[in-house]
Length: 564
Image (tube, rainbow, N blue to C red):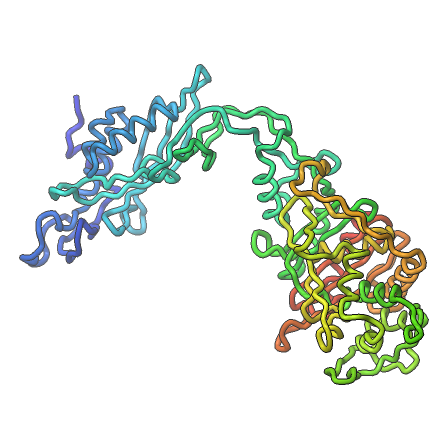
């Protein structure tokens, strides 16, 4: 025996207790009270189809629609909408294409605070409900998929209460031109595993959130094994997957083998959490493979890959340019023992003055200037370089060529650049300022090149053949004596220079370089630090972290200790 409309309203209508003033097809004034009776004078100009709906109107219409849909009477459900033909086709397609044999749609319980869960929307009263859809697909055991959705009750063209039809009534992700389908997934799910075969997830390692998202997008359809599962998903008119909504039967996941090390990554995650707007990258110095990469806060700007002036960490490249400069009658062979005074306020002829955070030292050498990060000691030596010397040195020995030859690491990265220049631009670039831009991946690679003696193009995938546009680099090894000099100066920095104390107990050999870069005179400098220990190199950056030994240094130290 059919349930009387009044009885049904008594069961479901409590959800909509209280008056809802909602729009029909035009603007109107709310005039009904809680029980639907008139509490004022209706404006004569308002047509019947513009009258606001009472709570009873909303409750009855929503209840009738949900009951008809749940009983399998799609024709009746469609008649309760403002677009009968469109709704009829959509309701039929929902059952047929998605393999849905049964639907139970239930309005959300009444909110005890407001007495209703319906809210006013632009075209009517928005009602929330829960769907339990039973999926029966090709002999598999039926599965119940539960999700939430909403419908809007307004008026149709003749003024009767009706569900305002939209594909999202059936499922919130549906829009015009999209369909709900159950079938074989287009490709297997993809697990990301570290170099030891351990599965890694963004939930475990949030500092890799955007990297993992990018990797899945790039390699979801690669031939990596696994078998696709049976899924319910949204497709577009071309039959392309838009979004997976429910897994009916899991497949066997494919595995993308990364070069990451879960243990080192965990240390990187923990280290960057101590500093806002920070990032770190660690590399295996023997082959350039990425061991860890983390950014804080996760999911926002990836500060491990954000390009910023690298400050004095770039003096590794500058020192290399000075020690490999051609020897002429006017240019001596520069070594760590070459004298270059450290005097605050020094200005090249016609150029701006530079300042130091170190005390003045008249007999300072290149090695002392490097380890104490004396800016003017480096600026004095700019006369021995050409406007493009830093650019050429970065490219020849460190693979730093910017957009002209990207690294293609396997995930989306933007490579640093060394524009070169004259005057103040050149002298600023000598100390990692001016228009030079680097990220922690670049500077970790610089330290790794010093440690190994040769640049290795970084990669995050074990199978480098998967990487689109991957190029082969024939980098020039650092001259033997130059490499020894750089390692000695980085060791001195770690033992008696600006990085003193941070590298204590590190695996031999080890060395470091600190840095800070002023972006805005009103803010603290961005802190930088790069170092190597054993066969691992790392670099970190902390926005407004002040000097690198205070902020980025502890991050790198934590990562390198975890790699022992």
